[in-house]
Amino acid sequence: MTDAAPQGRLRARSLGVAAGALPTGPLNAITDVDGVLVGHATVDDGADLHTGVTAVVPPRLGLPAAVHTGNGYGKLVGSTQVDELGVLESPIVLTATLSVFRAADAVLTYLMRLRPDGLSFNPLVGETNDGFLSDIRRRPITEQHVLDALEGACGGLPAEGCVGAGTGTTALGYKAGIGTSSRRLVADGAPVTVGALVQANFGGVLTVQGTPMPVEEVLPGVRHEEPPGNSCMIVVATDARLDARRLGRLARRAIFAMGRVGASYAHGSGDYAIAFTTAPPQRPPLPDDRLDPVFAAVMDAVEESLLNSLFTATTTTGVHGHTSHAVPYDRLPIRPGTGG
Image (cartoon, rainbow, N blue to C red):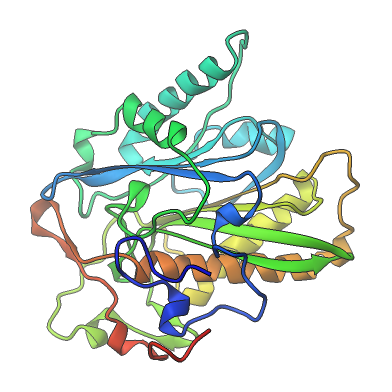
């Protein structure tokens, strides 16, 4: 398994932190689900712009899917049609709040190129507010950024932390970003992989394996500012035999998992989960009473994805001199080298 984050920061397991007892996939990433690709486009001028685009590209369109809204204070373009039909007709694109509409139009360009004879398309684009570190009103995301993320999407371990749609995000008092994780299990006698990817940008007190790490105590002398517009986007991919209704049950568990790391679920936190399956549609879905191990896998994968989004992020100073600090490893409740 790959433990080192691409930016030189460490993933949770390298720091002795693992969520749950289930094994991970070989990459411990959403791309462990066969055919799922991830791409990023990062906009970072080292000063006032820290933003970008992250794309999760399924192996094909028309897959069973569901959306769960934990708190609807946000913008998830295309979600109502997924609710209505239970079908994913688009890659999933994540970006900054005020760029979500330009991103949706760019996904439309992408889909029209894929289907030159199509008359209707449903781009699925979500966001979090990175305005604490990035000059969000400049709306710097262009069509080309979105197309770069989509067309550059690939397998392998996705970059995490301050990259793509996570470049300017903060969570639980610290610098956060993109994080991913996966789990493998057996459900109803069949092997199953569950993968998650998060764009973390929400409030609360960071909690690592039950131990609170309030920023005021962990970083004495650092003035903690709670950024406005806190939110979280969660994407869950699996190869389990599930229909849209059962995928909705998975998506709800993904939102629940935020509580494990200390989420406050505040008034202004737009928290959404999107779940889809790559399983062939002709196979009968898993019975509801066989879903418990899949639920556990979702909860664990999302929890570890959230921790990876924090542990791989680097201290960032952005617009108006605002600074978001990285989680210090020496204050974690489990020290490096003690985990699996």
